[in-house]
Amino acid sequence: MREKETTIYLGPQHPGITGNMMVKLKVTGDTIVSAETHVGYLHRAFEKLMEARTWLQCFPIVCRICVPEPDPNEENLSRVIEEIEGREVPERAKYIRVLVLELSRLATYLLWMGGQSGSMGLYTMPQWTVGDRDYILDLFEQLTGGRVYHMYIWPGGVRRDLPEGFGDKVLKVMDYLEKRLKDYDDLLFNNALFYKRAKGVGVIDKAKAQEWGVVGAPLRGCGIKHDVRIDEPYEVYDKLNFIVPTYEGGDVWARAMVRRQEFEQSISIVRQVIENMPGGDFYNKIPNPLNWRVPPGDAYVKTESARGEFGYYAVSDGSLKPRRVHARGPAYVHGVSLLERILQGANIADVSFIMNSLGTCPPEIER
Image: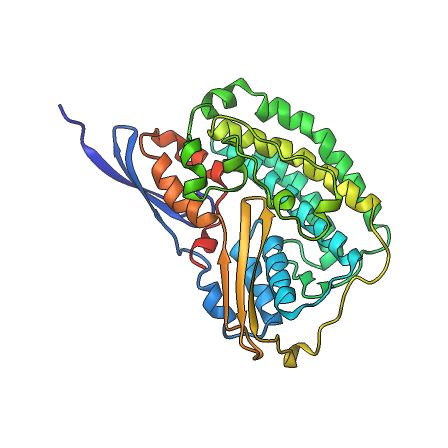
């Protein structure tokens, strides 16, 4: 007898969903026949909102494009404006920017560890990692005044200098997180149950990965070494020593191990930044923001976010507001075209498990 095909809607409030998005699944038994991504349940239309605001007023908007990782958006918008304007950034500000970006990467990976574990029923891990992430949020609060949204990186540098004694506090948190890695390994990464659940699940075809536009840990989990920080360095990444981990297999396990190794690399980068932090100015002041006209022109810049290559294209017509700002991130590829492909034939129990391994911010799709 032919099995009946059933339609199931997973999300948008399902705890395994990466943010507020829904996946429409057609299944026979517990096997997925097809998947269709639906977004738009939260923030949307950022690009059009920016066209109605001054350049500086755009910064509180772009932070919302990816709530767990807002800082690469600030970085991209700042650098694309600086590229059009030809504005120089002080060396100290570049180091501080890298510090913020790597702390943001660590906080994002801690959130991912909890989500990946929780989606297989291992709920001790999210309790640990969400708590440990708070130590990084404490640093952000002291540095920027905000725990999640910072509006700290902006054209010309950063909004304020490092507080007195801040470097020592950062190093203390890095020491703590490095010691915690053993606990994370014991509970998750070296867990035989996690290996059995993750190995061979959500496989991305290595031959198709670049063709499909896969980036970040999902691409490096296919054995392909690509990282904007190394391939096209920005800020002071070319002055720092770190490696780009890769794993073969293209599955959930390979992507997890890439992130585990990158977590360690980010701790090393943060330490190098603190140890080599130069003196001098932290901000090349912009004109009066209420009357700041960026010269006509256009530019494209990109960074390596925790989710992969993330670019911004901006156009200025010389007025007080941007003519066009376009955010090009990994979420559309990972959360729509890739997810819909690799869910076909998967077990329904693995849906949220696979989704968390891809790293998707739904508002970035409905930007």
